[in-house]
Length: 418
Ligand code: HSE
Image 1 (cartoon, protein in one colour):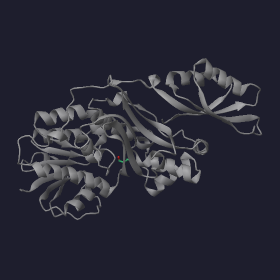
Image 2 (tube, protein in one colour):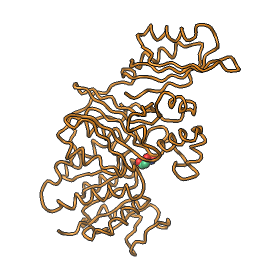
Image 3 (tube, protein in one colour):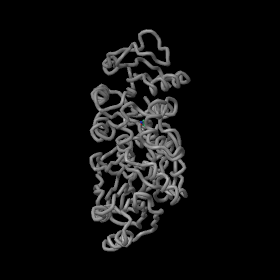
């Protein structure tokens, strides 16, 4: 087997993990590594001349077989990847945002040039999920995914639960410890998880899902009181990436906080761990869990992709057919208002006769059945905290209920997982 020659773009945490891991694979030769800032301190010592700040030294080097892109973001990653494909290179990437926003263009371009683009590291870091779906699960009709795809938010929600702390306090602590970014928006507002579920649902359903049709809500409004109340009802609150598809190809894909029952595996996935629960036929239901980020877990996925290319490189004119992406079919998006969910509603109501009756009457008028209701003793300021969990009903109707509860304060409205 001849040596596979690779160029790496980006030598941050993941890039260093890949560099260190590849030291055990003498048949993979790292020819060049391109970075923005050559002088930045790093945890690896590279040979003299290996690092450049001119990315085109990789892209234009016809002796390099594979471009490994580890910088993230759409630009300049797309510029480098598209130029590299046109110059005859296969691609390995960990770039979830690029895949979600430009996946179709990327895979069409790769196919046009008979190149492969592998991306195991982009979704759920070290958990093997892409290759299993494309290969050993290929005989399945997967119709449902519920996943924890963002470690930062799972860390924050777990700490809020365990310590009884507020979102703001836990975020501050997580930032000080380096678990959350200085600007946490991408994680806490659910963008990161939305990128990942867009690609995961497209792959699992074999129908293209568009990012703009993925409903997204972050965790910033979750209160410590919601955590405590969820616990009383036998649930945890998690940021869940959901995707389901019906027989007509209508795909409901979304990211938002959810109450998940303590009876499920997802409720027990804590701190930075990720997990993907999937159902389909003939497999039934499975859950894969593990580290969703980090130097070596992510390197594990990147190196696995590089080795898959190496195994077939030079042996066939059409490499890795099962690992290629095709986009003949599109999913029909389902609007969030048309989805059906159970809901947790936390209400602060004035201490007046008939408040509970009014809540019940409004719900009944829309055919919404209540599964549980809890009211604590009236507080000193003469208000009552009431928590309601509904049976499954249409989102449009629950929003009407909330708008009609005009003499109450609705503190939280959170969907409850099936
Ligand atoms: N920012 C992501 C997370 C890791 O917190 O899980 C990279 O996808």
